[in-house]
Length: 273
Length: 273
Image (cartoon, rainbow over all chains, first blue to last red; front, side, top):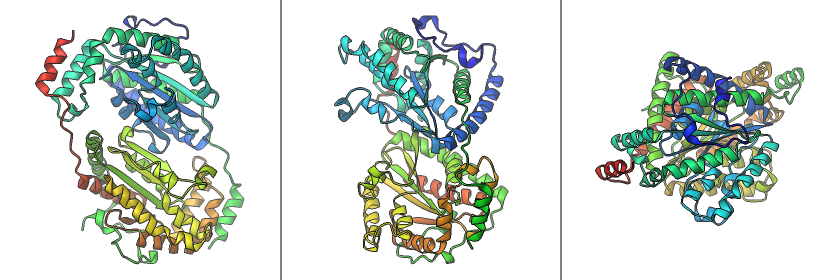
């Protein structure tokens, strides 16, 4: 099975995250992984260029993880090399009062990708069945209906030509501890530390349960979840790049027909002094 | 004078573009230029990271050029290597009916950068004193008042912590001809060719006059224009990177104080099992 498929959650799966690996290098060593990552990025760059030229479909990548799960690093290394003209990254943090005054998909819908673009969500509408559920910010009767709502929302995007790839970066609790401690040590990382990091860590088990439900109930044929082992950075970057590259290859973008006839265009060009 | 300042238009200058070079390598050869470009990009990457962490100020880069002037290539090479999480590119094409139903700054204002971000405008509100003027899409009495309106708009952004850098990629008419012909030849470039490219080429002199007025009247201390010779790609990329790097250095972003006391944070971290 290609690496890009090994971590996909089949629709209908009941997900218990304790059964999913957080560190799984599958016989690939670091230097091999870095070589394949470079190849994947090169291939993605060409595919993105064609997608941008084609302007008929779009790609949405949803990234979710516990704190220190490597979302920022993944964005930088996997999506950073693409042409910024066709890539958007939106981070969904604590909702503003204006956002809270609407339904939970209102702020999300404003950032779905236009045709030709790649959109990356750093956190997403899934927070509304994760942090919102764990902290009891809405009643169970409200969040429990959101899985079906999300599935229909994503189907709507899919029908409009958006390929959706959802990736959960699966981190062990021990690795999170080490990464948070590292954040506190290093001057150029310390600013990322927030007191809230503690409160979600303290509720680790509740989060794992909420993630398990979200990943299981919302992995669909048109918007599958992937559970990517993330304890080792080079392995995480390899797997994410394999998943994204495979998605772009399945989209199979094509350069459009030119808007003008070639010979006629050259003739016109040379008529202008 | 540093390279970043050599092409800046001093406030109050009357700009006649025939007096400004389209090809000026200033004693830098290609290999030296490419080396400096790499150094500039590395420096920009670090500065951007700090700017993002700081979240107190933002950078707006406005790119304007005639067709085939190298805007897309500049975006890819100079801004592509930055972290996409903190960079946005917005291309302003033909206004939609919804945009035409508002004032000309309405669509622009929606994309000004938030604190911590770098925003690149591929075309901009300047089109409203360029293509709109050349093609007579509004009366002279309307476009002629826009220079002052734009200056006050940009002052507003500047007062809110946005550093504004405006770059006109100055192309010779002959180089444009060669690049448009190349576009028609190459399958992976042909899609970019649009029939409108001819009509603006046919009005080259009117465009140069309109650009001259825009660059002269709207180069201010807080939002200067730069006229960058663009016939040679490697030289263009070097100069743009020098200008952007210098702007980021002047902004001098700083990592914020951490939100938590270090020792207290480590103690709390280790209290969580």
